[in-house]
Length: 351
Image (tube, rainbow, N blue to C red; front, side, top):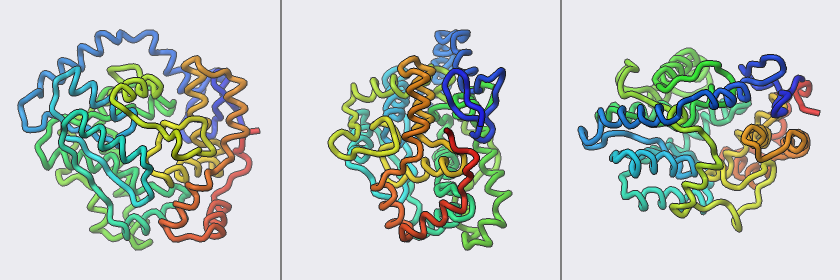
């Protein structure tokens, strides 16, 4: 296993490119120094000006209620004067008190309307079991929905503009090309669903259930979907500062999570941690490595400390998250670990 010289991240992430021992995420991060961020900010203002006030909702923002959601809504409402509809795709796992509070807080503080899309519990269970057992990616179905449902909803409500957070492919090094529009990402996900249709159907997910993920209109030019990370330097730490100005709660006093090095990212859904952790048996890293490498790039963690996190923290799966996953989906712990074993690739583990 090769690790990035700058941030220590392993080359086992699918699609991660390297040049001269430096990972794509670090290479792309360095490119920020060449960006005229003032010009990009002006471009966002120009784009918003094309839509502001021309429809009942002039944009749609997918939100969880987390710190990134607060930053997105702050930017579009307070800085750009837009009137968004907020949209959340939910799962059946236990939701934290902090996560529930933050979502209510976001809606209340900005006085906005909110659309919640809840996948039926039966479908959620079956789709999660299929994806976990066959691919080791439990929330594959939900992750698709997080992109396709807001896009479909915007079409149905005649909302011309959708604002997502970061362009993860570029920010985290699986693409060398930075783009501001994300319509291609929705199109790509729909194509994946169609390619996998027979696989899902053989495992009991019906055609109608798969179709529920798909946009009603099968062209992808409208609404326009943009990544905020193109217009503002993306930083979870900076986004947290904005969120706290509006009363954002982290997990302090509620849940001392294991297998992570922070208490304010991905905090809404307890068992979602299992989905994130499943990268470890498959690829030798998980969320802790993701966060540590970002901190190194931002200058708040040393490479030595990041490597220690990847070795000591990445293998740890939080017990509360594991219990919530098993209770919700219907596994015994022994059944869960047997499935994990099936997906394990020991040669990928970071030493």
